Amino acid sequence: MWFGGDASRIPFTMFSENHWIVISIFLFVLVAMYLLRNKLSTRDNRRFEIGLALSLLFFEIAFQLWIIITGKWDVSFALPLDLSSISVMLVIILLLTSRHSVFEVVFLVGIAGALQAVFTPVLSFDFPHFRFFHFFYSHILVIWVVFYYRWYKGFNITLVSIVKAIVFLNVLFPFIYALNVIVDGNYWFLMRKPTGGSLLDFLGPHPWYIIGMEITAILFFFVLWLVFADKGKSMKHE
Image 1 (tube, rainbow, N blue to C red):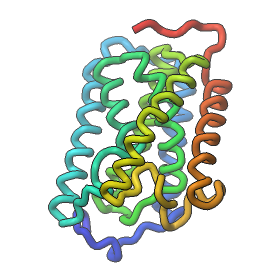
Image 2 (tube, helix red, strand yellow; image 1 turned 90 degrees about the vertical axis):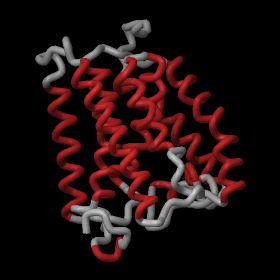
Image 3 (cartoon, one colour; image 1 turned 30 degrees about the vertical axis):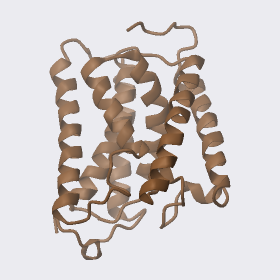
Image 4 (cartoon, one colour; image 1 turned 180 degrees about the vertical axis):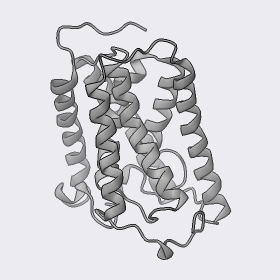
């Protein structure tokens, strides 16, 4: 039940009791982080940051091993090249280096993808399966970490950050699309929508929803900038 490959034994149901518990924990911690943002010191937190980075790396390696052991690994979907995995890798780099340029991209790209994953997860296994913990831990920690850097370490985003995030996505886009064609994959959901329902259902049929995804991403980036950026503060230097 914990590590098996048969999802039919404990199938995940969106907005079930377990899903709502996860959403509640996610929101509770996020609100607590905001309320305590001026009361907690971030000095001497390198061990904490490195520990979070290592925990994310551990879960990603464990996930790859689990796919291999259960005989499900396939190049068409198992490479860590979906936006969620890329965001996790960027968060690991951010935690280890505290580079502001990494923060700019992952704050915008990571939140956009992780929020969709938390509220409309493409997931087969329910609690207490390993995949359930891996999926929600990785996505939720992306959001918690970027807000930790925003609220506790004073990292900021600007309009230039939006340009960097858009360029980042569009530079990767042709390579991901070409990979999908070569391996018959669906990385970034560029070839077809996920089954089971998602926010992409509101963006029209293939391939038009790809344009809708880009427009939606840009609009969402601007919303994040409007809500969370300190407009009177210059960017933190590397």
